[in-house]
Length: 71
Image (cartoon, rainbow, N blue to C red):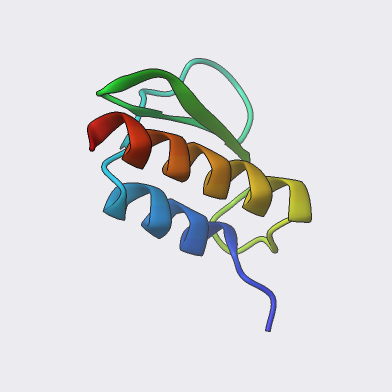
């Protein structure tokens, strides 16, 4: 089964990322980790949309980077 954007959002929340306020039009969401300034993630799509492979890879890399920085 294909993962959904909501699954990535849940992964980011569990890793300590915070969703920033909306900054304009569109359905892009910016997530940032408070302890790691350069570990921001931009998710494009609605929560029910299917995840693209590049989104999955990007989220995994940023979560790993945030865990390294906080340990």
